[in-house]
Image (tube, rainbow, N blue to C red):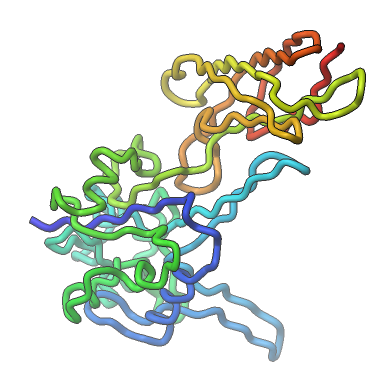
Length: 310
């Protein structure tokens, strides 16, 4: 049996917004009944007074910056309806206004859902919008009309992605790319503790990071080839803290080092709970005195310049 799913590889996205634009192009001003009514665009009213109603982003991109100047890393994280197998919006809906298609896609009926604000508020990920013109909740449908009526194999956003950051397919098909990514490739859903059983998964989500630069106190120059040994003890905000992380890095020509993947970061609605922890860095370099630096972090952190004495 077919169960559609999507995998978002955050590492491959550079924020071109092609998926967002393609989604708006497909839905703004276009009804695709019975799966969706036209997506509400931004509304500007200049008379008698200025008023602005923001448009919807069924495929939204959140820009996540980690670290601090001059060591900053940037990621783009897609947020869309998670097409949950145990969808709270379906439970909250009255009169069958939200339901599952046989392939697992969650549909909000554009007629039956009129006035049912509880459908929007039921989503723990915040991915259902309210259309103030039609008085109905709306969201991503995985382009059900394209898949079921036009014979397409993937949603419009996937077609538009120039870097293959979005992968779509049948999670029950053991030969599909999404099956491999989810079952053996490490793709994970957002907030599994919600119990909603999402069918949107992620690879390479931004994680807690510790970085810095090593210089010689004697010469004031960056030290290339220094060995930096890390011991990191995570303290997770929910659940049981994972075991200590031990890793080693070598500084580059600018004396820079980086340890990524130290735990999840809180990057917005629907993303994993934040992790902090304590660290111990031991830095050794030829001709310099070995030094240890300790501290605690609660966010991705750039430590700045760390000096070694001759």
